[in-house]
Length: 213
Image (cartoon, rainbow, N blue to C red; front, side, top):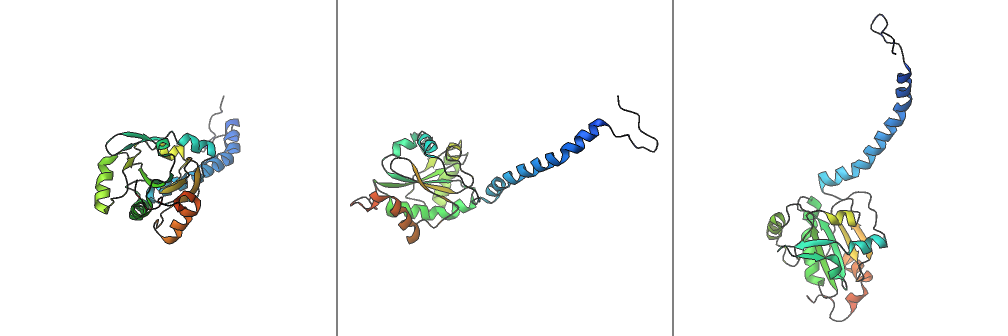
């Protein structure tokens, strides 16, 4: 039973007060730690830019990601595994992401230059409104070589442990993740084309580079 407050408005210290005082520093440290973990995600959402941390998916996770199902613009479903046999540059993006908007024309040029039976740029939108917002975006920015792919539920974000947009993954013909980039790039620059080509040996084979399927 708690004692009545002392005269002058004060209150005698109780055992409960001691427990609260003892736990306060620990709780404070926990709150600070949680806040620090949340900051990268907040930055990515607000600015549409890359985050500092990006954890690459393990081989097991990459194999599971092949079961990822998404849609074409006409609503037909497609699984990532159906694209196996060719190297895939998988770009996870959204129309509201400023950095994504900046790099999209260069991804379109890369597909126009290198798209073939051995290589495809797959720009996978995670916009919840799907084709309703992606089609006008393609038209506005003159995107003509990239196929519209839609992931309205954001399954790719979870499957590939994406921590910020845009994130781009190079998947080998077997579906395994080879490289990962976080943030916007000039994808048709000589440096990036060279880097991609080094990790996709099949691109050097006759007829495999720049020949649309």
